[in-house]
Image (cartoon, rainbow, N blue to C red; front, side):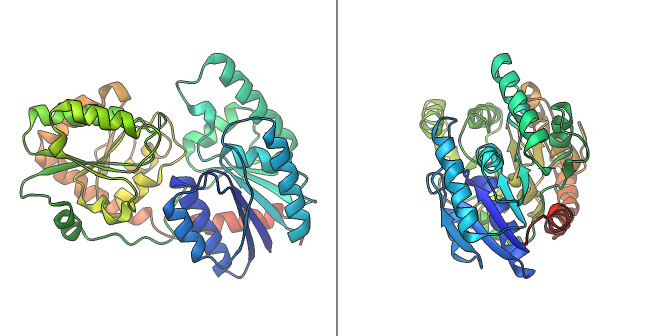
Length: 373
């Protein structure tokens, strides 16, 4: 099949997903075109582009909603006509998903993966939630052949928005390929001492990921326990606020911050990944932690219950409300036996995070909805 992937948020988990999906489909003999916005791209996405057997086409798409989206949709339509015909045009995340669905894609099937529907955001105001919900409902009814939810929570939210089961498909994120730096090597590179307990945060430093909540919880643990250290892997618009909070804490020497690093180089060094996000589709950091045998303490975001075993479960990690996270963190730190059980569970759960099921099921969905060749 001739397939077109479209992404504006070419960074973080969404960028990782698009690279893995494009690579996997190309390796199966499909002809891939990847249209991406150069305005929001990170180093890992750029590195992934260089190794893809796909036609790569930049198309500027602004992050915020505005009249320039009309120009982006026209530009996408022009590129689809020039480089098609395509069987499927697949838009990733809310912006590229909207542009893909309002564009003229010359008869191709439109597939949309939100990578966290915005209406999952608990901080969204009533008016904004209503407006976004109406837009998603209209586009879902009129301009979407298939919506892919990456977790059960997102699948249920799409249903609440009125997207019928005939158009709604659950295809959880998985790691088609994953190789991380071994734990002992990563800890040595980090300078981790004997008996130190490292808390990890991986992701973009933005309000959605709530990095300040992680810093606050880590500082609280440091006040109680002299062996606690914290590792941050990521960068973003809240980096200055994170810097200020760490500098004012009195524990700056107990934080390590890898701003532009690949999480695979560092994640195994952590004794516990802490996911403080307000909402997610299914965070790749959670998948990567389990694949590296690192247990997780997470807010109840999409994917957490499925991968960790449910609210309160202690198989591969613990799911707790955001307000209870600091207390649960202290309880885990105070119980090394329980933390050891979680590590053993994470190693087992990590096997389920690997494999090509995500690519298999997406390919099968494309064949079902494809219109043009």
